[in-house]
Length: 285
Ligand SMILES: N[C@H](CCC[C@H](N)C(=O)O)C(=O)O
Image (cartoon, rainbow, N blue to C red; front, top):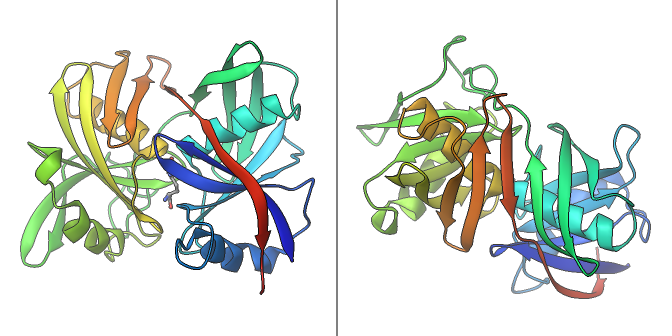
């Protein structure tokens, strides 16, 4: 099967984008295709696959599959790229529109200069904070702040936040030496997280700056995680290291995002989205 694709990246978090108008794939093909295109050895090379499709409840729909083929309910960097693609390919005709995800409908606002989308702001909606919503395999309704996790005979404390997808935010002194690739995969698959979890290591540098590294569920080490950056700011506010309503610059490995958890409880994320290339993937199933 010859599959036309667009590769896009946002702060180095890159995905293969398929426009549902150009291809028709069966449901059972999506997960193996995500694994195939993500391989840098035998495929195109990416952090996963994103499908752009028509929506009955919004202007456009986004589905996101990690490199391991697992489907996630949300993707912040993917949303900004979908918004850029949808506006510039005339799937939408306003600078503000809605995008459906498995985690709910979000609102996008594209910033345009000479017809080109330069930045995208997404209203990511409200964070979900109870153990049941993250989800954790235990715990009741109380917010999971500094929640203990037993791992290899030691206790790690994380703050749990869902942005439609699960995040475990761990506070460290220096993200450059954080155990991202050693502890990240162990926490990702820990039994406390029945659906797995994205693992963020953050250092709150000042009242409006956070340093950030991430081990992503289903994709491993990535250069950026938009939902993770939102979860990081929410966790920093919960730990009273950042004030609610403050616009925080989150320094990810691939660059900066501006994130605010506003007084109306919505989390707003602003950042770039870029095209990399277009092509045809010759999929031999
Ligand atoms: N690995 C994530 C999905 C991608 C999220 C990330 N790339 C972002 O920009 O939010 C998960 O399984 O929940």
